[in-house]
Amino acid sequence: MQVTLSRRNLLALLHRLEMADSTCTIVKPGGIVVTAETDEVHYRHRSRGPGQMHPDTEEFIIDMEEALKIIRTRREAPQCKCRNAAPMVRRFQAIWSKPSGTWK
Image (cartoon, rainbow, N blue to C red; front, side, top):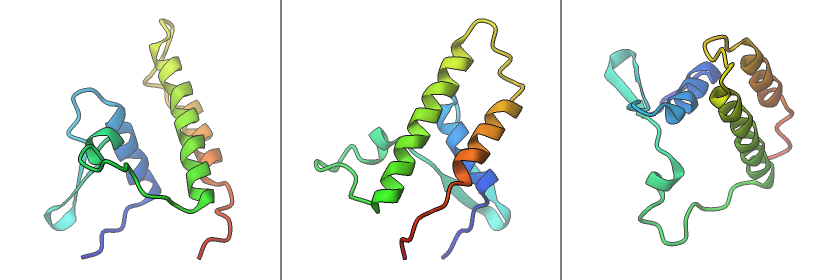
């Protein structure tokens, strides 16, 4: 079985990982269920943790973690208008549109 997600769906799953009471799930047509887990949950039974990925992918993951730190800080600020996501959408679009490298 192959499941194809749009960038929007991937970002929605990423957001759901940040939501305290979320099931971190998207239900696709045909009843296909896609669920995300935090790394802590997903790799908890693997003593060696996650496997290696291409260096460009590893760098991208680090960039995304840094972007999430910025988002979390802004959402925790007392003056946060968290429901107006336009600035964050533009930031993620800039990050996601980086060239992907030469991995084949």
